[in-house]
Image (cartoon, rainbow over all chains, first blue to last red; front, top):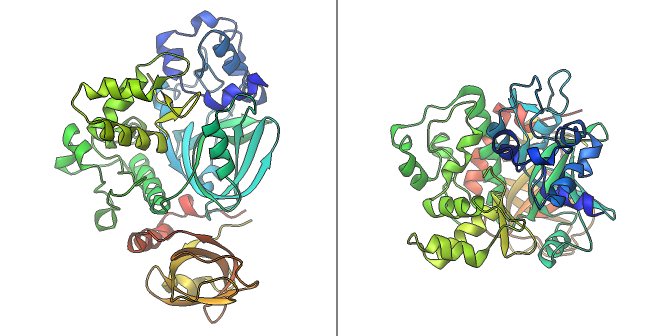
Length: 341
Length: 111
């Protein structure tokens, strides 16, 4: 059971380690032996990779089944690029394709996607001992299935409460991975939280269009957005013209539009919509190697030295958590980054 | 289950007989439990009559999403509702809804 739980948190977080850091080379059998890759189907989904990583002290990280293929022919698997969090709809997930002979690669708009964010209403919940399966309806097509691995013995109170809140009729925001499970594509969710501000639904639709346009057409941004710093401060996107939702209110995210956005680099740009304090918090969390991530007090004391107030750091942390940039681990006080470190 | 496209009041005539999602502001104080029909001001400020098959079992919030079939008189036969709270920028919602038909690959999939 323990094996299964880990995969909830694991998946593809550590692609950079796999491809560049060599951090898992020492896991040898797990990687070279094909667990991570060959197990890309149901085996992996049951957390083979995650378990190995855990035994090696990797904790919430995992070689996972969606990491780079050893010597594979899939040149599209570019490591960092895989980490793009793509805003999607059910309609888009129903249209995901895979290149011939590479069914563990998922394409939307001919762009490889692993990590997705979806907003919709829970219309059905099936709970078993090891997972909860949600059917999510966002009005764009038949509901999509999202699986969340659980562990009744180990999940924190925070996790239990959040799960209890995710019931039929509740709108949720989900960050997850596209995976193969029993030879079918499914979504493994690692962050599922109820929507409280329904402007998030509007925002998600806008962001979905924005990402699609950025990827398929590329973006030529106005001059003032080309400066990185300023772009971050501006936050809100200009590309929708007068229809652009403006940032404001909790959970209402500025679109990421700061620097030269082009088709292939969309994902890498995703964090560029963050404010300075959000970037600092994310960077501090991302630089932490431990199993459980970083305690909120450590985050505050670290970022505080750079001239930010406790309140602004906490707000930034809430934002990053809500948007799926970071996630809580053993309790709601400890955070790890979902990004490359 | 098919898509239930997000529409506003002006788009309703195109969807007669189909199931849609329409978000609007509930009108007046008559949105408490027990009622069988209410008026909804759609995101583009059209008044829409909303008919429930069962009396409402719980109160509606100021903003609601209604899923239901569009009748020939452009009223809605509700299959379900979702309370969207009292804080929604309905004008921006409407602007986004107007853009959706331009992107069927993103917002419309029927099996």
